[in-house]
Image (cartoon, rainbow, N blue to C red; front, side, top):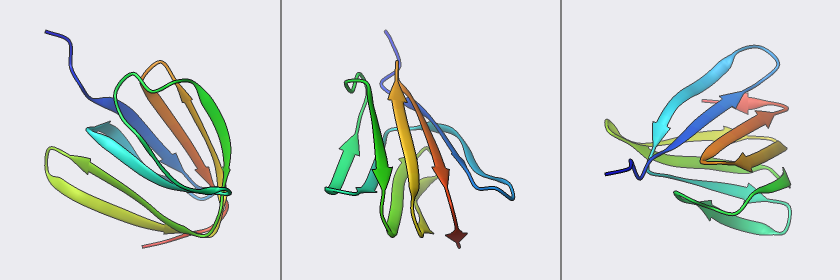
Length: 86
């Protein structure tokens, strides 16, 4: 059976904030909040100030961001943030 997880990488100019498999990720898109699950359609979006929230095997986690960009492609989510706190 294929895994229902997606691979999430969150980076800032200073460091990698998260790199691992998650069940979902919720992002503060410029046009509003949106969620990404397994087999999501490809997309590129700008991000506004808010929280990137995700669930993985160890539990739920959030990272506050000031903005950035996200790319979703083939069950991989790459998030580049301009400023991150937390």
